[in-house]
Length: 332
Length: 287
Image (cartoon, rainbow over the protein chains, first blue to last red):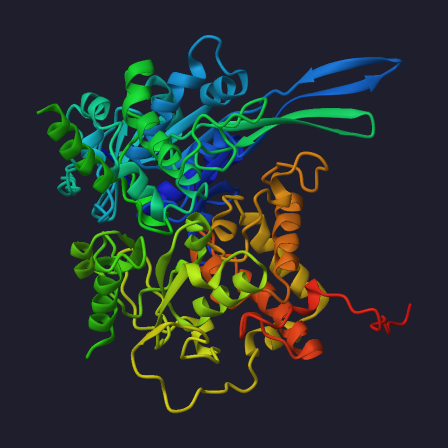
């Protein structure tokens, strides 16, 4: 027996949820599916493969004010930014839920990032199993899968006219306390199988594939935009700047990317990654070698967004396969 | 002989004779539907070249990365206009590039793993089906270049809307911008070593990825391309959030064409009107 909720009941439960907390869910507009805050359950898209952008922006926003400094009564005061209210992300796919688990490593390691930490603690994750594997998907090669419940509070899996509901955490159980659940004999459809990518020992392989002409050749066609990093559920690099206006100062951070020209330029003008190849290699090495070394996790979840959105088809699946070949051959 | 055979043969000849360091063309992408740029350095690689209606990338964008080398590039008619624009603006030496021109049937609206037979809207308004400059031509030029009438139906439609409607239209689109700069990076005309948007002093546009800054970024970029945009549509093609950037570029292109009878890149000699100044010119505006 499984816990079950009809599609209609799901909408009404989500509608109630949106009244008591900020509900972030997939919305279809202008032909795109993006996560956004919804006030009514009717706004939510349920028939999507995955969203164009990952949900990371709701925990690590594209632009975030860190603090402001304001003049007050003859003195100045530093006002740190804070997060208010509870939130829930509905419709997060298992790959993106893993993405948040990976983001926890850099952001929650001491000293924890205060804003990320507050948002993460206040955001419940209501996952939705994948009904199909898109051609670019390879999550099963990165330790998760289309129906993996391990990184969400609640997992819903479409079955028949509704959803099988798994309460994964205590928070999930509490959220479901008012949900119209029924016990039902429902069999979930078989989980789709994404095409595997050879990620075995990728960090070890990467150590041997660093100094090869492949990177310069691959980077020939890279146009060095920030698109791959901005659609990625894991990329977390940012820039920080101060803006002052009319006696008020604001320190903010925004998304940045290692592909952007000038990203690694340091005081005095020195550019440690001064070739296109070195810049592009950094993206893959941060994910496949440096994050495993530093945090014990691969910085990729197999969501495939960079694969579909790269304007020049720099395909991480192909890059990983090529690294396996290059890492193996230079070892022998 | 098929155009692709002629491209491959020419590429092989150029590489074998070491006339060029590499040939920049197209190969099939990993979705087996679309195309991607291919840089061929060895004669053995030329068999990978393809050319069909999915080859939308403007490869002349890469010429700035190979500035001190001699390379060959496959150029569609709009791409060939970029070469003239770059030569005109002293960004490229003509003798450093061997242009393999291709007669263009128009590009289709392919997406990732999503084939399409639908012609891209921009290609429906195209007035050049044969490159305006080339060293070698693959394909047979059409007997007559079509003249769409009027040439800017998309812009005219937009001009017909009220200010409030246009305001709402652009606000909605710019709000989605994530400032990934794919538009700038794909553009052959955006070659500044330091883009205004990256400048700290003076600070022209703040770093917020938010409606106000997004609008500034996209609007200023469009103005920098006024009378310089060669209508290839790469910016719009790469935009992940579907901002119709070409509508802005074409509005400015239309103004420049109507005022100065000028289209960017048709030749390498005529100075674009907005980069020149004549003493006898005066502003006849009602100030």
